[in-house]
Length: 246
Image (cartoon, rainbow, N blue to C red; front, side, top):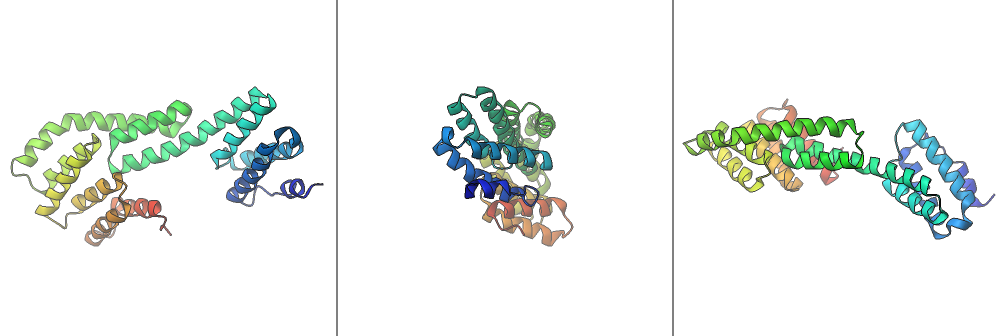
């Protein structure tokens, strides 16, 4: 047996999804270079993908595998398999969008979250997390639209930290990130140790993608209240995006 075939044949998909995806991706790169001449390798790839999907109860984590498969099947003239691979690619892309939407929802950027959920559902209408998330985000956007005029009036009429933070919350939900940051700064100017104000400023920076700048605000929030779940989650998201989460 050709060494590459033998190596892939012996792949134990149950040991690691990451290692499985890497091996399959490498093998598919070879197949793409000569689809008609690599049908034996393709047969093993198909079998290992099926094993991995069955064991982990989901498509293989690397979406480029399904992109490559779809291209190979088109070259081979198997359009039914190409469509099936494309559907699985859509599933993986939808999962990634749903995760992004969940982050935006946690940070309070509900309008952005809703757009991401809707994109996920356009790729995979059966994604239950995206479906439920979209309902929740849509309600949050509606609520923010109702609350904004009242929140703005209270904050601008000599508002305290809480009222400026509530205004920041409504503005961020409606994707007015600049306005939300200004309102967060006003809240912290009144009370620089307010838990909600610190978290809201961290959230605004997270929505901007300024993860390094967001970290100190969540850390200060945890100094105020070490048991704060929202501060811990915010810090974890920031560290995750920085690649420093333990």
